Image 1 (cartoon, chains in turn blue, purple, brown):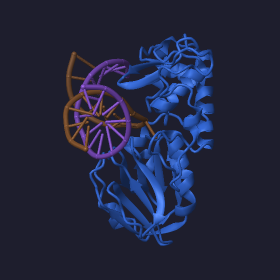
Image 2 (tube, rainbow, N blue to C red; image 1 turned 120 degrees about the vertical axis):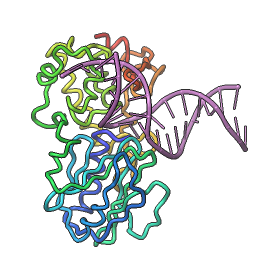
Image 3 (spheres, rainbow, N blue to C red; image 1 turned 60 degrees about the vertical axis):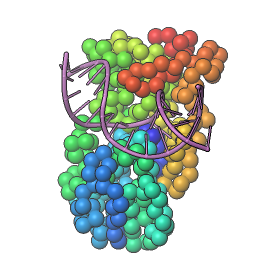
Image 4 (cartoon, chains in turn orange, brown, blue; image 1 turned 180 degrees about the vertical axis):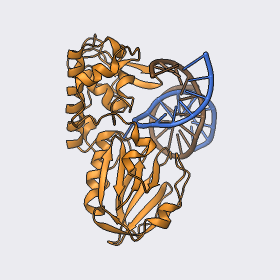
Length: 272
DNA sequence: ATGGGCACCTGGCTGC
DNA sequence: TGCAGCCAGGTGCCCA
């Protein structure tokens, strides 16, 4: 479900309610997520204060004095603030109850998400350590992509969805950025010029920032930290629009598959 | 090292 | 109405 903009929207939504707040207790209702939820969360977290809510790629980090909680929303997860007394529903797997009386509630029907406890530096956790640069920060550029793509025969769309290349880009925004950059998603990464990679890097920055401004993309169930949907779905040019007219030239949007994921593109506007 | 395929899990939608 | 089949915003592992 959530890519970088949805995770960032979630972070911004919850940050005011969790930063500087002390944890009263933790309720784990299901621990069989993508990795098991450690009992240390409920044993160690109460009494500690959440210093910061940060994001790295699609991961959220709730920092305490040393270490913290690493959260990932998988395909179907979301986080929101609720009054702690709110009755849990079927897929509400975890509550971090604060002394303010609000709880950070983690919901995830498919349970591809994660909630990990660490006393080490969260950014050094094996799951985060190999993430590529943040696409909205220094260190990410078309020239970087060009260098990383040298010799790669992988399709450019799969290349930019590889979190080791760039963090946080999932299927929606990969499709959208390639459309805006005018690049065919099936092109080999190693066959793209520095100039075209610069267009792609810029398209990624622009599309991710626009999506964050609109609160992310809600296709069916994404909600921000306050339970509200995002409105970037209204701006989608290609994702989910197979057979519909291209917003730029009117040609039918093509729907294909790459690496098991749906790909949408305009064969007129994305010739190469 | 690289790329392809699959598994993990639930729910919603489509079409018979 | 029921049900089978397919699809979904992610990612890590196994294999060639």
